[in-house]
Image 1 (cartoon, rainbow, N blue to C red):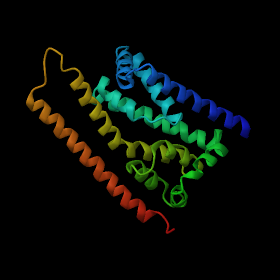
Image 2 (cartoon, rainbow, N blue to C red):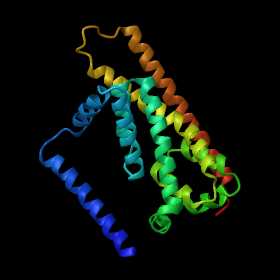
Image 3 (tube, rainbow, N blue to C red):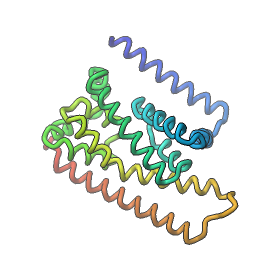
Length: 233
């Protein structure tokens, strides 16, 4: 089993490297290509929304960063619908990764997570207050999102406790990235017949600034609270 796991990891790594290399060699603009594909998906209506959710869930389970897809959702779906789709997809993806870490590939996940030294103290604290620690680590940018998905599967935190705390903790960051994406989408559509007025842009930027302030403030509070929750090293 160990050799099979290593071969799978090697194959995935090679495919990713070849894919990135091919994009670079052909001179494709990855961001523009992704935006175009997401726009095509959005034009499919409800079917496209389902496809986007499945794509996002797959990226989350596959340890791929979701920030680009989150920005893309804001650009093509707008703030409200983009937030709903990303919030749902990221929560489901986090839940599936949790289950993989707990049941399907526990030994492999344990080996992969040994490089993250800070998770040892976090593991001990989770046993005392699982909901609070999951919530705080989701708010804090110090702990990588995809790593936490699998890490919590190795702890004794309950599944629904993990899911609910993760969803709440991911809301500020999701809102910020979708908001950024929605503004980028608006900028990309400046060739539309009706351009945004100065007042509209002021409200856009004020909303973005307020969202960023709340997100950063929440992250700082979470960072301080985590220090008080973790046992002394």
